[in-house]
Length: 133
Length: 217
Image (cartoon, rainbow over all chains, first blue to last red; front, side, top):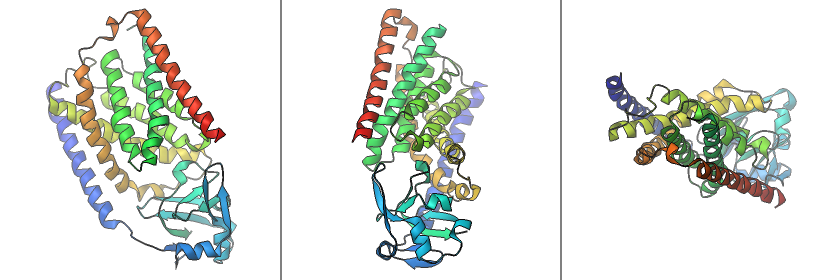
């Protein structure tokens, strides 16, 4: 049994090394380098979005930016409370939320989405896309 | 192993792990370093390996994960760090699972190939396992919806990030195993319990004070 482990454990670590390296290459190759944010198919610069939507801040979390729900309303998405929203980061990290969460969310100037009613794992950095689904 | 001694060991090592997660982790994060990989590769794997080596008991690392996860919840805005607490507890479970077939005296870990490989595998699976479990359980704990698609598209990124944790774990385990011949039972009870109590109290004191200071600021 010990003999088996002597072969198995190094072999598994080599497989992990290959998987990790291949994933790193894939991630690097598919990284999105966008300066704009795509909102329901339309591209906006962060300055445009800050011009369109109302400001919002979460003092207790130390974040300020623009309100996500107001942004959705201002870009003219119909029946916003019946839609789900997927926020996508440049690294592929994405989170889908409902309208109630958007009402408690903001987009910072550094293109980070923060929700006051959701855990930290729902924060998306370097947002490149907000999809209405 | 005396059960009382083991229980105290779980509290001490769990508190040290929780202290690292609450105090050192955010500092690394603020410095722009990949804190998740460092926390798993150095502190989680380091402390769990030390405890397995010293106490020679299965199940202890699961207890440590629960203690450290509970401590993480003591941070300010505890409702928002639930993901970290879940990940920490998950790392304890995954470590137990990986090391279950390992002998208690760790006789398999004689060569550097085995030490490095074990650290590499343990850190990788603890990191990616903790990450995936927290992505699934956090929305459920926060009464939000979990979308499988959101997780699937991010799997390559998780597998990639785990590599750094694995490399760090591959260094941590051989370093920790230098202390392999140390015998915990050789410490006199009075010294053991008083040191354990002092270390645990200090960890909890720093975490709670830090939390209160952050809330007050």
